[in-house]
Length: 89
Image (tube, rainbow, N blue to C red; front, side):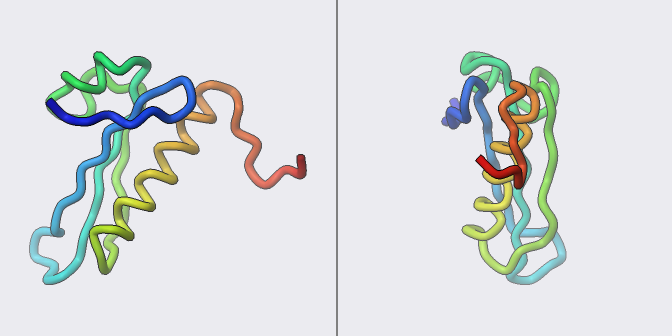
């Protein structure tokens, strides 16, 4: 069972992998789900997700993961109607 991450009212799953054919490069795939149960049991990071995506190539696993977390969090905020972008508080 994968470990979903709570992002606001939604749940995300992030998977990182060394980029095929890219020595030392890392990419991450992410998906946002409506509930924890769906996030735990979707085998392909797409079937039961509300939206999914992937990152560009990054030099480290941590950088790819951080970008995927940012993308998933922002997407979850947009879906829930709480995203404020660069707007002043």
